[in-house]
Every structure is written in C-alpha cells, then in structure tokens.
Length: 508
Image 1 (cartoon, rainbow, N blue to C red):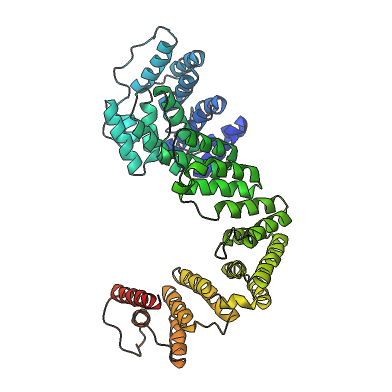
Image 2: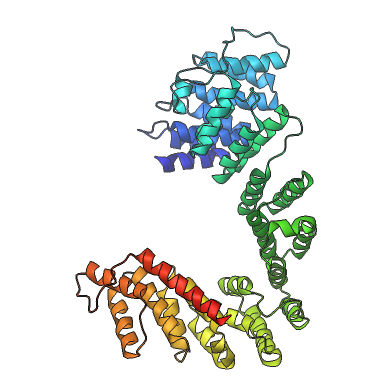
C-alpha cells in the first residue's frame, strides 16, 4: 500500500493527474493519514499549490480519507500566501462536498478573512484547536490551551524523538508565539531526521513572530549538515556565512563536511573562503590538523590537476611546513574509493621520493596501510617491494593493528598485513591482537591456531588473552588446555593497562 501512495505522489508532483487518479482509485485502497499529511506538509513547504489541490480533489472518494484535514492543508497554504480568493474557493468546495469543518479549520479560515479585513461568514470557535481528533492524531488526550503548554509539549516531543508530532502541533499552534528555545529545538529535531523543508518552514514562521530571530549554534550546524547531504552547497555556504555573521560557532563536523563536499566538487576557491572565514575562531573549533591541506589537494585532483596537487603536498613536506607525522590517509582513501589510478600513481611516486631522498617514510606508510584497509593486496605488495622501510614503521603499523582488532570482522586486514610482512619485528603484539580479533568474531578454530603458534614461538599470552580464549572454548563446548584466569575481563584489562603505563614510564 505504501508503494501505491509513493506512485500517487510522484504522479502528482510531475503533473500526471490521470495516472494519479488511476492509482488512487485502486480497489481496496484506503487512506494512510500519515502519508497524506506528509505530502501535504511538503507541498506547503515548497509552495506547491497545484499538486496539493490535485491531491485534495482526487482523494474525495478515497476510503477513510479525512476531508476536513485535506481542506485544512489547502487553507494552510492560503494563509501562507495570504490568498483570500483561494481560501474563499476552498470554503465553497467544502460546503459543496458537505464537509463538516472542525473548529481548527474554522479558526484558520476566520484568521484569513480577518487578516484581509473581510467579514467572517461564520462563528469562530474560541480555541485555536479542535480538541478530539487532532489531539488523538498526535497522541494526546487533549491539546494544550496556553502557549507555555505548547512550548512544553513540543519540547517533550522533540526530546522523545517524535519530530512529526512536534511539527503537527506547531502547525496547529502556528499563530501562537513560542519560546526561542522551543523553535530551535523543533528545527534541530526536524533537521536531525532530514526534514529540511519543514525545518525551513518553521524558521520562516518564527522569523515572522520574533524580530531578529537567529538559529543557535547546534541548529545552525545541523542546517549546514543537512544542506550538504542534499548537495545544496551554495545554500550551505550561505548558511555558514550567516552563522558566523550572527556571532555563532559552527560545529567541527559541519565545517569538516562542508570543506570535504567542496573538495569533491573540485571547488578550491570555496575551501579557501571557508578557511579565511574561520581564521578568527580557528583555535576554538579544534578542526582536524590536515583538513584544509588534504581537501585542497583533493580539490586539485578532482579538477584534473594532479601535478599541482602533488607539488603542493611535496613542497609542504620539503619546506618542513608539514612534519613527517602529517596524515594524508583521507586523500588516499578517497582516491582509492573513486578509482583515481592516475592520481594515485603520481602521489605514490612523490611519496617514494620523500622516503628515498629525504627519509620521510610515514606518508608512504599511510598509503600502504590504506591499500590494506581497502584490501588492495597487490598494490600494497608492490609499494612495499619498492619501499622496504615501510616494514620498519613499527608505531604506525601497530596502531593500525590495534584499531582493526577493536572492530568485529577486521581480522582479514591483520592477516594481510602479517602475510605481507612475515618478518615483522613485533610478532608478540601482532599475534596478541590477531587473537583478540578472532575472539570478537567467535572464530574458535583460528583462535586455537594462534594460541598454538604463540606457544610454539614461546610468546607469553597475557591473562586477558587467556581469559578470552578460555571463555570462547567453553562457549563452544571445547576443553580449555590451561587454567582459566579467575578474575573478570575488566580486571585483567585494567591490570594490563597499568603494566603498559608502568613500562612506558620506565622507558622515559
């Protein structure tokens, strides 16, 4: 049934009303109030009166369709555009169809007449809502009667993840002036669920109620993130400008995603613009150290200017503007994902020059590890053959192994690394974390094999490793060939942490 409504809405939006009529007249089809209301709200947000009017007309004979709610949606659009003539036409159609209007509908219609200095041809109910059906629609036994109660209820809905109910209540009470925090909370809740049009409608209504209203930091950053996800980069950059102009601070994530989006488009100019904009607050944002360098290089590559990108990075390393520890993994990952083979070849050649001529080996090691991350074994092997020093970058390789051992399903990457560097010096660390990885995957056969290998090589197992292996063996009904450490996992993890810290202090 949901698919039928998707088709119905698609035909309405594209103006194919004959096809839409055939869909909605499908035998056995009945109204889905949430879907109809969703489409109505979307039409209102996009000011699409033609599609909305067509929906109201075509659903006249739809089983279980709430006709008052359909016409109420049309009146909301009339109010938005201050269109008295259309509102009068809607009122006439309601009477012709013998629709009994609820008090909410009469109140809205009366408001439109009053706003245009016209006599109201009926008695307007005292309350801004109608108490029974609408309250039930959003899960309330009765609707709040005062603005402070509306504030509380919208905030409660937002807190409990009920953004649709919060938005419906807001539309019912749109003539009431609410708290600034309530508006911000509602906009954040809507943006968190990708409801950009609805959030912008709330913002527009709020700006009419409260002069000088501006979104707070969190809502502004969410707006930018949502616009980036929709690929509305021009609008996202405008929102970024507005945020800073209003003295607000963007989140680290919003800034990062915006910069990365422009890099993917090859828009180096916008990246420079953002970097300049945040210069006064750069220290407080705590952005990734390599954000602008990585994405500037990526933008140049996306602009088919690989030479400029490699020269840009190489220059920064040679001039020592970038230290050896600078991490280019983001660029490598993107290029591997996008199959940018030419760019990878040129970058690889540059990284090898840095390693061979200047002794800067960490960048080429990062590329090697990214090949393993993406399971590009042949590429990793060829790179290693040309750069033997990679296998000596112990700290980076161990950090990679530790990271993989924490995530279920990553043991294959540790095995690839082990196969490529069979004489890796830290075999005890490698096997320890490989055992942990197999434990997470409940691979009892591989765990036992690593245990036997460690025994054969006289590598001592930590109590934590023995505890993991013992628990796994018992879980699969297999004998435990050693005395199981009696304490909890937490106890042995803490003990191992303290021992490592003690060894680190001794080294210092």
